[in-house]
Figure (cartoon, rainbow, N blue to C red):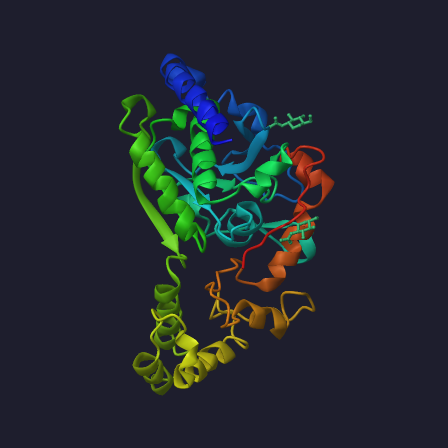
Length: 359
Ligand SMILES: *[C@@H]1O[C@H](CO)[C@@H](O)[C@H](O)[C@H]1NC(C)=O
Ligand SMILES: *[C@@H]1O[C@H](CO)[C@@H](O)[C@H](O)[C@H]1NC(C)=O
């Protein structure tokens, strides 16, 4: 398996620079259209607000032998896309869809509207500042898939980083005008692992000038780094945003050793952190200043948040993404629609099975 992956990567990499050099700019026509990417141009997304920028969606095969394909949705910048950087966005999980969360509930230009009936324009979309590439990875997440079911048992951070790297070079073949663009990788939550891991692969491979990707930096939001630091961050954030009192925070500071084997064996620590989590039953931890979604759904009852923050779990609660839990339902409803999938060039038979596992 490792060997096969290696072979495929080698063939991708040995082929890529020649293609890029030979075709470089010529593949961009007068209107700046990316000729190979054109088949992925999204033209008739139901309910889409009218916009001036182009966007593309579709698959990039990252492993031909096993038939692994990653799904992306790419929004060019609203103005002067040729002069703006390229930003790859990764949601976390593991298992969290970058289309279902990042693109359509958070920072993309089209946010799902109530009941999954449509989309509304997001005036704060990051594609005001950059060309935004949302990638669903690894296979099994969102619309990304493998034709070899045993691949799903091999998933892991290295696997993900290597497929994501293969994706980038193959994607540049579709969009050659971005091949030499200033590049950033951004993400949240478990992407606190994915982002630096992909950055490291790029950094290593960049030693070969023909593979050079102009990576300038990484951006992480609510990243998973290590449990101890993440707990500290959660507690400090709650305190600095007046979710808990100075007193509670002081007790935590004095009694919690998050680096120990079992921080919760200290009752004072356990109770005080319990107080933080109690507050977050009433406040949306992902959006302190907006109202909590009250729609009856699996996302809005106390149970889910309790599961999320089960302190016995050794895993840090990870950011789920959506600032309104109801958006989860709208996003799911919208992207399970056949007409929407058709517009986004999602393959038949590769509908979302596990929409997202973002916790
Ligand atoms: C997966 O299999 C389907 C059906 O044979 C095929 O159409 C598709 O191209 C395959 N995907 C990849 C990435 O090879
Ligand atoms: C994913 O979906 C499959 C079948 O649809 C189901 O058996 C499995 O439990 C799901 N996995 C998770 C983690 O939800």
